[in-house]
Image 1 (cartoon, rainbow, N blue to C red):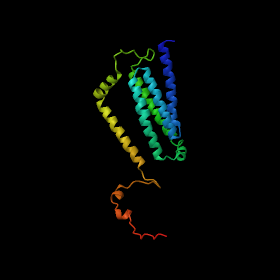
Image 2: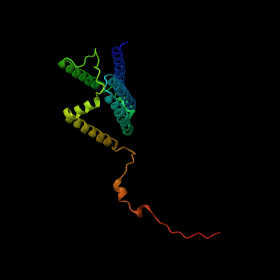
Image 3: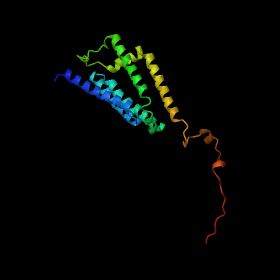
Image 4: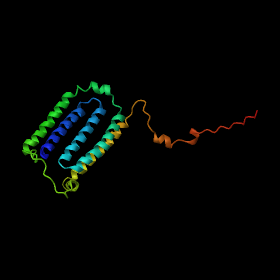
Length: 205
């Protein structure tokens, strides 16, 4: 078996797992299962990037998204205290909206591919081997901080807004939720919390 056939077979295998994982993300009614399916999608996408010799992107995807971002997602899901019974009841009510959104995304992707004629990649030949001293990390840094510097800063601002929104959602008022009152703690007086009682000593028997 040649190397090209092996790479092509691995691509279709990883692609199938990636599509199934994506269906699990949008189809699972439990948000924890959706997050775990997203982890599977990230790992599979990292394996596909390894096939095209994008080692840095593959490692960053696993370390940053699987190791940090997904842990944050799980913490947010747990702290939001989502009512799973209510979520299951409204799943079919918005199914039509999900189908319309999926069709719109598919139409947009097909329109881009049709307008450009090709994506610039020959799937039949596979990637061209790079030189031994080639560094995709260096090339990625040059592109991000020169040609795509403003989109990179915009993405950073969007991530900051997402973090602030997640914190705001966790701090919403709920019944029987104990919250820390900083003003009450600072304004407390020793006389309100401590009382010294003077008692006569008891005589020895």
